[in-house]
Image (cartoon, rainbow, N blue to C red):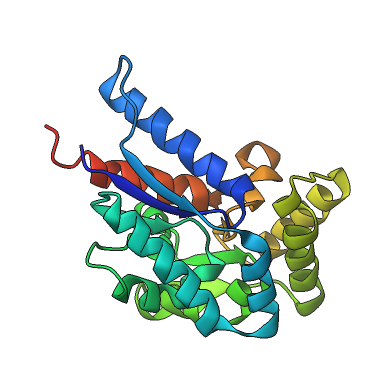
Length: 233
């Protein structure tokens, strides 16, 4: 079994999900008392969130690069950045180490393709929904048509993530708001919706809507297990 590197803490609420899903998937595949080999560095999210707001992405990249080097030193064979937004600096972080990065957008695109989805809605932080590093990656590299909500709804989605979900605060009104946005994108023609922030799965899930939802936390974690066990017959 290969050792999975997890660069977590952004926020820890979703990193818990990564740890749980990965270990459950390994136990399901191997049985018995098996669990995943994991090397994790979990960062303090507060200063990173301030760097995001201030546009100091170079500083944030330095923090994550240092964490990635710690993961490599701990013996990981490959690593994941356990957040969508910080893939804005994925190239810089990946360049700091010699082990490969399992990119969250690549994992998500593979899942969408497997389900025959071409036109997809995207929910996430404002950075993820509005900037090119994620949406553009899906469009250029994977040829997907990506739809995001209108401006006011993008702000709602963003604010709920930072002010509620990253703090473990789950509110029924916010769930209703997210499901309304999913319904509106579905009426506009999307075939599914990417939960493109690793905390969104804490708020809404497949049981809440007939629209196919693609939870990036679960997808990323499952793809990590596939890679970790790829050398096991």
